[in-house]
Length: 497
Image (cartoon, rainbow, N blue to C red; front, side, top):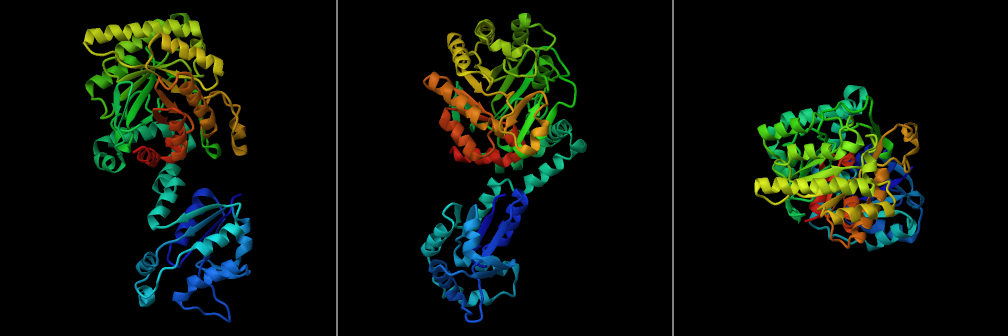
């Protein structure tokens, strides 16, 4: 269990931060206010901070009294802390916050203008000495606190998520369908939300211009029912599907499981979708989203593997006028025999026919061929991935999506191990490192010439940054979006500006 200690002036917002962090992360948070009192010392407000510096640096053991009442000895607290947060706010900010809480607290204004702000080097040195092993966060404005809370997924989305996770008695698939249905109904009135959430960080990849590099991964909106809601939540592109030529119900329910302690999901959906023709009709009668649209196509379950090429071709032909790029899904673990299509001979035959079909359809429409990408599994060996990349190069594939879900159960939290035996693909935090390693391998193997969409285990800005650094041109969210909400989309996009 981690321990967090918060230091700061009165009125800096320690209680708010402590309460929020404690509730969000289930952490014991000790708030150590700078105010302290003893029989032989009653300092004036002007001298208090200097006395804090003196006491900290003198090595004395002392007791503080803050908003939460008397606390234990400071150095002992600091030595036991995993994280120390110092709220180093200008005094006027603290005074204003206190005044807003209580209009009668005018004492602050008596000394506010005569107070000369003192620096914190001595305090910081003492903290470093007492808590040398701890992570140290120095926050210098209330806005920074808000950002910290956002990074810890505290706030409105957490409340919404809590409610969503209760839909259908906690059934993850019920929550999924209800959420997309709500988004589909509210899409027409989400304009104001888009003005807040949208971040311009344009990038051009495989000839397509994206308003920002953060996309919605396939699987979230299989049939494109909420297409116009996703751009309003900040996404720079949307990938629908995976769709198949023949409509199919997918695997028996239950087939979707949340592993909350691991921030992961196991699914064995089995390409449940209304079929390529139904999606084409929806896109024809409605309108495309205001961002690039990718379409993931897969093999129909009832179609033998020997007839897979024609099955994929039917989907491509039906949907070609509507997609800005197409993803060939040969890596889902939930359709029998599908991953066998990643083998060199089978994949070469499939891509040869699909690239020819793309060219023929482009000539018909008198346009450039749509980009064709291949989505690969994280469970392939480096040698197998290298073979896939050779086939992609031979047939002029425009890019790779790395990666799909994994069959591995490594990295699960102890509290989620009872779900480890569930059949299906695992996504989320346990996949973070492996997905990034695959992206790095693809980037190195191709000399950076083949565009990569990185997906898998992206749950914060740091995960996304590392994925980009590994070689991804774009990233996609699925599980991270479920656990962290649309704020994650905005934060990643802002980090790429």
